[in-house]
Image (cartoon, rainbow, N blue to C red):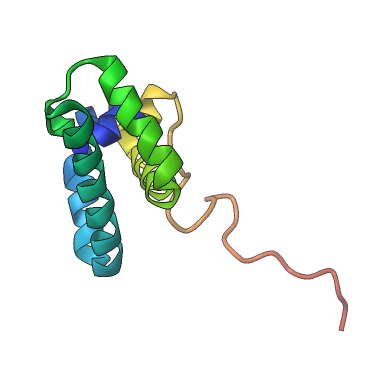
Length: 123
């Protein structure tokens, strides 16, 4: 899964994507089962086409062929995994710094507002 994540979002390994994914899967057992089936399919396609595990492929063309096949034949898995990796990647504060984004102002909103906005209705 780490290799596929790295292919989808280059640099994702540098922020500990494997650990982030494992933590996500520990919390979501149903999702873990769904993604596990997709990874098995990815492996089966790679082994059938190139006699190697996807994780052992080092030729870019072979990697792209397997990924295109999975994208075409197992779209739900491919798109959901890509979406998950993107969310985990761009949700990381280390990536925010690379993008010159300081992050949210604070967990509960902006410091300028001590009270919730009032409605415009008069009683």
